Length: 250
Length: 229
Image (cartoon, rainbow over all chains, first blue to last red; front, side, top):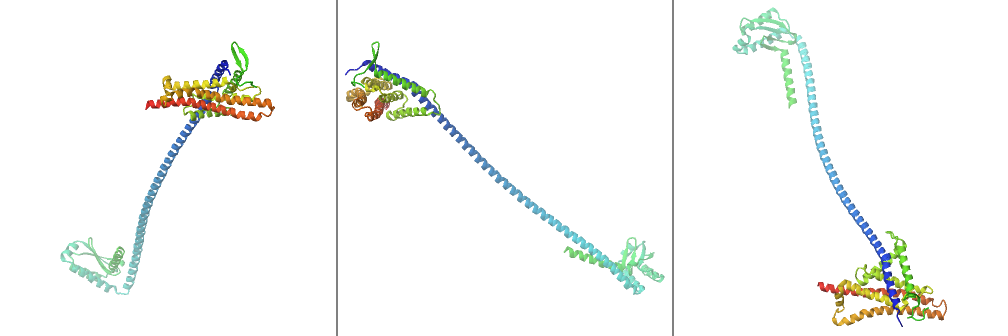
């Protein structure tokens, strides 16, 4: 057994050279390639993580936006509901007010129409009463009616205080109005009767007015003493109108 | 066919230097591995080809083995351990080529490899702790064990040599004997067995190199940890 030292040294050198060569041409490039791939993978993972984080951030922002939009929508709905309720109440109030106004207007129209109708009826009643009274009077002697009615007129004058008669009739022109012309005797008798009650001198004139129907009236500048059936009818119609107004007001 | 396990055939003389068969075979292996590596690694890409993927798989396997066996970062040890495995694998399997004798079947090649492991163990241990610290590491865990640790430093290198040489030389020798006695096809099962033996021996040599170097580095690490505490 012997050892070839040259071979041993050459083999040692060969293996060391092979180590250097493989380190240069094999391990270093391959390790670098693996490291580069690992770095690329890490970069991809980092990018993916960043993209995921960004996506999560955007998702959170969208969720927050959706929540805000939902809140806004709910607020707007509440506002719309509130406005609608207010409008409904206002419309109801307006409609109620209008209805009340229309009711009042209808009532007023009805009342006016009723008043007009009543006035028309009263007018027709007065005309009819006048016509009826005139027809009834035609069957009575006018002298008797005139005498009775004139007597009532003089009774009214007599019932006044003398002071009042003097203040009302002193120095004024008077007219005695009758529905039919008086005879001279009747005029003289009327003049005499009035002269006993009124201050003298007495300025008296006579006129005819068929609308009085019956009786007589004494008219002066400031005095109008009525004692005719027309006056009575007017009083009765006035009372009827007053009673009707009172009943409507009640 | 080799006539004696300890004889090496001199092919030529370069001055006083004899160029033997294992040296020439090793040159061929160097050329094959270097050119092959250059051809594959000259165009590396992020999307690897099949050859690149296979090469990355091999290199990554080396890194994983170094990390798991030595417990350290594999980068400083990868060229040494990886080259041991690749060279031994190709060298052992070179016997399949007719007329080629594996360089590992010669004692000089195995001694050279063992000496490199021996030097690497010293180099990495001293680089980690310095000369004094590495010398003191032989007195761990007790000064009484220093002679045994020192003897072990040499004997394990010797064991590397003997193990590799015995296995490879015996395989080649047996195949040669059988081939000379039985005929052409009879040694084929033995050659297949030699393939397995060659791969196992390459792995064992690389694993033991990792263990020896890792032992030096781990002793250094334990001493540093004790010094820090």
